[in-house]
Amino acid sequence: MGIIKNYADADNIRISWYTKKTDLLGPFLRSVLWVQGCSRNCPGCIAEHTHSPEGGEVVLIGDIAKEFIAVTETEGMTVSGGEPFHQADRLCMLTGEIRKSRPGYGLIIYTGYTYEELTASDEKSVKELLGMTDILIDGAYVKELDDNAGLRGSSNQRVIPLTDRYSEQMEMYLNPAARKNSMEINGEIFRMTGIPSQSSKELMKKLGII
Ligand code: SF4
Image (cartoon, rainbow, N blue to C red; front, side, top):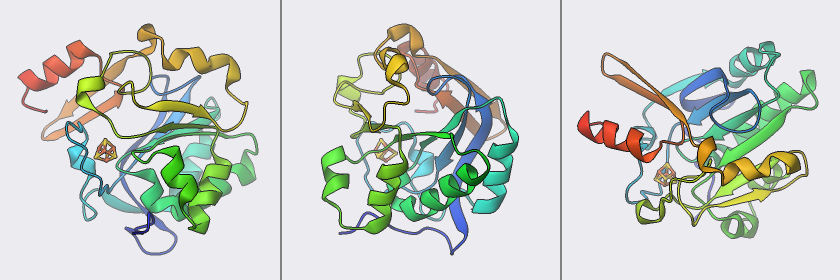
């Protein structure tokens, strides 16, 4: 079965939400995009609200690109989800559009697929997106392997540099001090940015969010 699912019409991408500037998900200040739609159903996933392929909202890729280009203090974006590679072709378009204005724009992706699953795919845009990516954090989140360390959710997930762009910042991915998150509740809408610490997860449990 293929990886690409295409959850929106051409020129659009289905997203859960985005933030234009944060220091919580990778080196330096970054924009972050959470795509909508994931078919993987990993047990213990704390992002269930991003799974439905009909959920979230459909937005024009050009509009998101403009928003991210305009935030000149950022040096790149992080993409999480949902499953980014289900919409790899749209993310290639988005990254390409941003890099027309900002050629040095960095790209970090969190995926539930393993690197081997992605490189075994013969889908053109999966290969193309891997070719645009600076760091890939791969593999499903496994609750039992959550060691509360750094910027990846569980110890099975690998932080794979696909370029040398962030070679001097790689230590933060395993540094417990780098694990930080913010939470925001607005009516029925809950937003979390970052990788949650144990205490944040306990708080979310108390609030009935997970
Ligand atoms: S791939 Fe990510 S978003 Fe999808 S179910 Fe697994 S942990 Fe959740």
